[in-house]
Length: 388
Image (tube, rainbow, N blue to C red; front, side, top):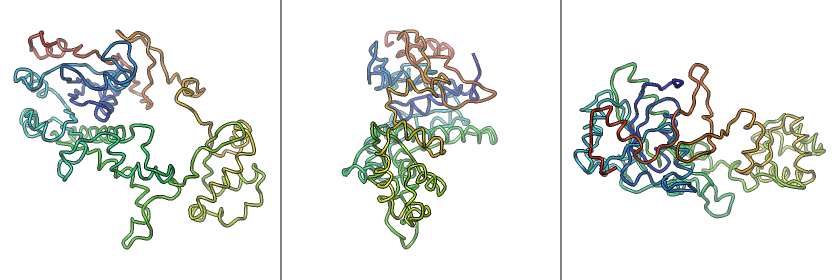
């Protein structure tokens, strides 16, 4: 087994759905020993999507590789005692319960810190526990709507629209990852752990509003919110004679070259295209011009011309197309592997590489409670097996 950069770090993972499991899956892929603590029915994503066996759904397989599964009923004191023993030896404790729920279980930061002062405690919440919404339930759709994403997308679609990916969950998971890694570094420098709060709502507001603050950045405001380029209805994959293409003609050189290869030289000196400020002010006209121009050739003809001119462009892939993408296949991004119980499955490589710590999958997503005996016996605990 290769040792990832987080080899020797133990994570107690009391998360479910996507936000928390995505965060801990990245930690697991980088070598941490992630112990997934589940109730007796398991993480809800076990039952989401196609599966060969109940409780081993496709999304669960991708979110929980390299983890060990232990089932505990934390409402039973003897089983919670086993978790607290694990806390004493853990480096990181991650949960996605609402503040009231985690307090009710007696698993607050203050209590766990009294058992292990080096513990990094990461609470991943829908909304900050310091604010008015702290007790509200939250899922990806709710946060996309609350954070402005759905409304910004509605500038293009006409009505508010969710993005076709669980962006809020996964982005908050990435923030959780970076916060945990920062706290681990701090602990190595100073010797003590700390509490981390990762609220999904505030995280996604900061993510969304980075560009959409726009004129509201200033006081008094120099204009409305919304970055006009990315909310233009004309910002989209463009139709060609026989399909669609994505083109981003970005800087001044790109535009001059595009007008030359597209035989639209009459626009080279058009002031609406002269610089980025002018193009942004006339963004709908600018994108409309590109749209009408790209209808004149086939997708392959445009790809040949634009690639030769070094103008950013690509075909528009469907998720199914990605399995045949020549670049991804050249690096074996999708790997056919044998899961111990699910048989042959397709696995995605971790996208980041480490020159000194090459990463690999050492464990595939576990069956519910698969590692009860293994983990608890490491502690010398022997719980009644009838519950498992």
